[in-house]
Length: 197
Image 1 (cartoon, rainbow, N blue to C red):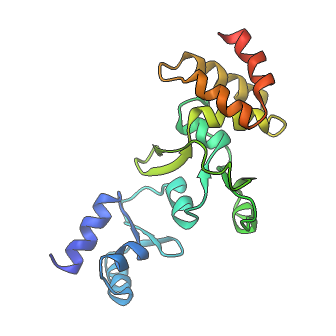
Image 2 (image 1 turned 120 degrees about the vertical axis):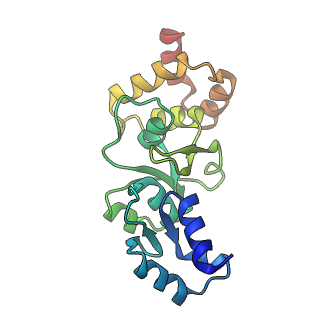
């Protein structure tokens, strides 16, 4: 397969998004890659990330490509888990404590930080509305996050999420309670569940 065919296939597989790092991992030189980008009129979406002329920009996928450590959480996770009534105004992500968040916050991203031992709890994957796969926290972790950050999450978003969660067939109340104890929101969660269940 020719280099140009490899890049075309890669672009097709990623719904019109090409990353320099992916091309290099296929053994394609940066100069050749950039020539392909220019010739095929790809647009720069972020450092090392390019969009085909006919591709829709997927902000969530691009954000996570730029910052692979970021896990979509809180309102963004609720939206991807179909537990929100509306699309979030800002992307919300969680990072390990100690990570420099200035660039993300300057770009309008709401950033939460957690201790490194809590960071991996509940990480899973979901599809963005554009069809790309991104890392998010599962429903149980997200419920605990929004209860823990309740002063920063609107009450109607919390209520809609909890009502939606208890109606889900795939809900896992034992896991939810385990996470709630870990994140010290078990008392407030029980109050909500007593009303909803």
